[in-house]
Image (cartoon, rainbow over all chains, first blue to last red; front, side):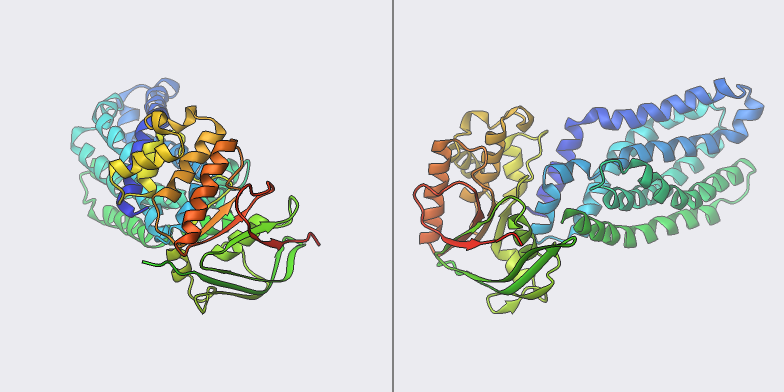
Length: 220
Length: 205
């Protein structure tokens, strides 16, 4: 096993299990479609709320996607093979999260312009929404990976994982929606986006290591 | 190149939860040796493998590989071993060929196909592993043994779900490996058909 063959195999298995990824995307689309119907479909309400709706829907679909991130690897013994391979487990985790991120976020970002119109999001702030998603979601995936690794050996770990992870998602959501609100008020968004990027970079540095430690603890 | 293996386990003491798994376990695995870890269910055979690989903390005792304490330097041991566990890491959405390519990226397509032939999986090379039987899935993992040049094989229950011919083929391959200076440590409840092994007995405390 080497890093290239690992990434290829991960990518291939994600492609073979398209329905899991599509579920997350479908969930995202459904929340955004149903929200206006349930609250208030007028543009006066939706336009200012659009950023919040999009980000909550994203956070929930990311949670769906990462919840079982290592479940199959745990059950089929792949995690043991990662540890026995002599490769850095942190790098393997990073590659796996990268593949998952691409698989979920690329279709989501492609669908976003259409969905944003359903929420009357002004075109001028669409770019900020996309930027906040690009900069903020890596943190969501990486933090989620820690939770997924910690709970992988538990039979019903999903709820515990939500409790562990959701508090850590809150700052990301606050700064992301803050950036979108600032964009709608024609204010500068670079501050909030910089903080989002900082959170993703910190997660990038710490989360793979912590995930690797959790995986090692889960395997015995 | 002659393979060399020298694994020494001295007075190893393992426990899991509150249960003692082994006390004062001393044995060695050297080139050309086949070591069979025996013991009833739950005696700690798999845990012993995991302790060697460093996933289970050892309470006391030493494990040395080529003269180095593995709790300090595990890299040498990790670079020299091939471990196949109870669940050998076969992805069910991938085909046997793709699974092998994941673990043996250096091997040519021809070598991969040959390895699958050795475990009688030639015709199944392009079928998703989910559709294979338990024994066939295990054969996919075992095919790695035909592609590797790692000297030390750690095999946890390699014969489970294999048919008679499969067991014979694997034993024959283990024999060639031992003759070339490699070493094998395996756990099994079955009696070995053609091989003679040094037995390490794990007594349940």
